[in-house]
Image (tube, rainbow, N blue to C red; front, side):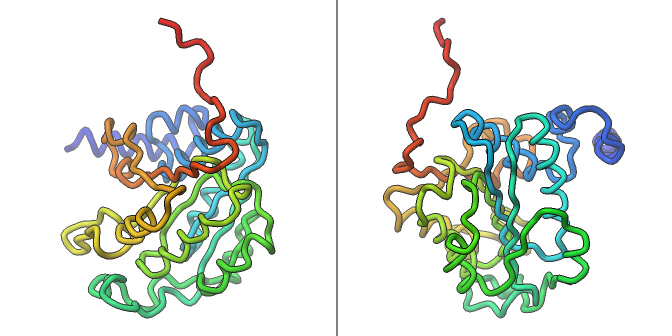
Length: 260
């Protein structure tokens, strides 16, 4: 236990002092939000292989905005390494969580007003991220027509509720030109503890399951390559969204020479 604590402290120090390269800090799990770094970096790697030099990342559920600030920092580092520009969009109601609609939104754990945003202060801090403020029921409708985003390569789902996550996921049905053929997705609220007791019939997990049942050509799957390692909790929270009808879904991205 003492050794684990010392390792965590050392990693925090390495990250705070930015010791070593971004890739080195990511390799040793020393970054503040490893899941953000992982999906951002690997989305950019895929984009580069597919000859995209510009992608987007979405965070559903901004709250205080720490996630956006971290994403901005990681985006700068990734552009230096891979030459891929990353735009960041943050969706939020601003007033905090709405009132849970029914049991599927886990009212025994979430309460109306949680995670309010100080929009004025946050706008002073962010440099390049774009805030999409309002009810996702409305903002999801005209997001693509108003913003014409570069292909989305990574999505962070942190709306907490089943109801709002379901609407956010419905945006995956937009024109495939707005996405990479495979999208790295992080779901914040699918593990929890003895309090949340997340299951497949409520919350974000239910939204995932229903989406897969209702869509033939777009499917979400756990990242089995990460589950095989399973050394970090967030390894269980990464899912990959496959757009089978994307014009570049079958484009070769593996190693050219695989001869044994």
